[in-house]
Amino acid sequence: MDDVQLLAFLGVDPADLKPAPPPRPRPPELWDRIGLDPVQCSACGNPAWTTRIITVPGLGYRWLDQCRDHAMAVIAARPKRPPVPMSETLSVLQAAAEESGLRMRVIASGRAD
Image (cartoon, rainbow, N blue to C red):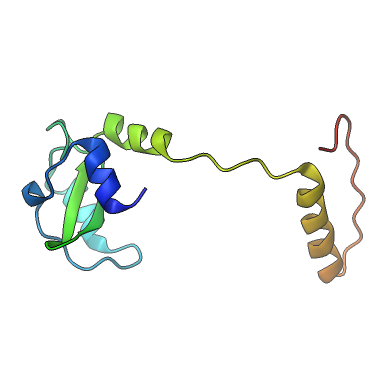
């Protein structure tokens, strides 16, 4: 789900979100925002457990703070990936072992797929 869909799912008005810096890998601002000065969930006002920087068309980067329940709801709403067949997983492991110069023997019980 993209950022606009996420806001719609949570019922959050993007204009209510505070401006955020451009996203980058593991920015210290994320920890500071939740840890030092607790904030409220953007959806319900409960104490936030997590935060992220999202992009809102026309508004730029914004903080999306989430309580535990709303963070878990977003995770649960994500589309599920189809399971990878066991034979494909074993094939990748076999190739990695051979590339590393290792010998590998798979011992399994039950169905292979």
